Image (cartoon, rainbow, N blue to C red; front, side, top):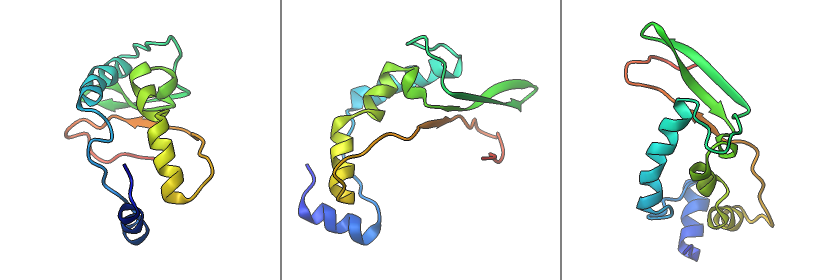
Length: 116
């Protein structure tokens, strides 16, 4: 999937676009997975490590969630994807890679600036 020319582009540009790395079917199912996460419906029964709320139009909404891969099997399929890890290792010339954390941010239209 990744060729020498791709490696050279990554080294020069600092990023690499890879078409169809994740299937359209999986991307489509992520919409449902993310909606569930925003409603605090955790498929695995495990709450993400951090769930932060902010006021929006007079109500509290989830702004960010940390390590949602623990809470959603669909997100897990991407975050823990072996092919993505292998590509990262190749591009960075590492012998292995480990997940530190993932964060899902929810920023609705008109929300304004986010604070990190």
